[in-house]
Length: 421
Image (tube, rainbow, N blue to C red):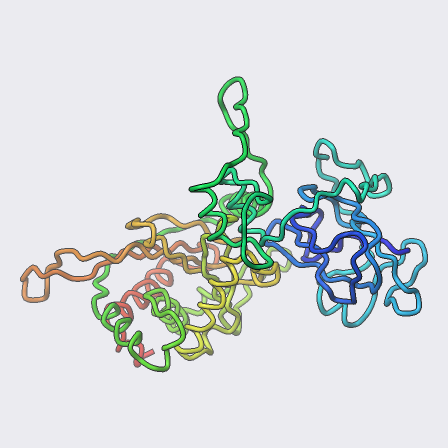
């Protein structure tokens, strides 16, 4: 009876949290049926089954953090139908399975041990099985909905729903009218403590690494983007964009890709071990997205080769996936430049920190109606924004960074300038 061990679903993964079991003991599963949702440092990932058979035991309860290689579920597989070998220590190894999870199978290195959380087993070999009768039969809900319920103090078991899954609307409606969990008593000093894990932990590590590795330079420019606002309004009425959201971020993303043609240094990375600067052949554009789980930066590979319609669809897919908490680790690696729209929060500007390994990041402030001095010295109301560009001074000189920022501003000032790039 094989045990399914927590695999490495992304480069360097050492541990993950069990969020939601999709199966229960006694339930039959087929190969590639989703068993569980886990939360890594970057995303929520669905783990499909490499076995066919009946679920015998859930070895780890929801909410537990376990290390890679820890048995998490036992499945009574039919040995003639199951893909993996049944020998001790054997790992699932099918071609189909390999295409689903990165790094699935035996680890060739030993990860650095992290400090053990209270109540967790000290090592995979000492994992205690959970009595299946004691595993709570929790209502079905997506991880973002579970987090919302937790934040609102709502017990999902009390929330009525019409379908199979409890929805965000169900939780919000219940929070206003139904009973909630009793509030937890605060600690003696009145302070609350939140575990550092998941996206917050990953973001903190990345920002510290970036701040103390790459020499940051930040430059600013305030620009009249009234013509970009007019273009966005026209595109919204264009039937080619009928099924996708059009926003100024789309035009900014396109302007960044065009400006890189004249400043390729902005699309490069620093290889410390080889002592080389890598000039990348295409733009892998990161777009920062604020989600319930924190800030994530998924990427759009080959953004520079996309038409405006293709780029709009890519941005829409990226945003929807990020907000649903389903951005995969591979989608947040290998970026070359990032755009972050801080203006959606009513902020005029800031000094963005580089994502590790990237040459630059552009922060776009809010687009607001303000008085502007026109060419004939008259004061007119215009749509104004502030752009802040941070770049790695090892890769990009001041002249190059200034030219790049000026080019982006020129396209946003008059999108017709794009024809000259």
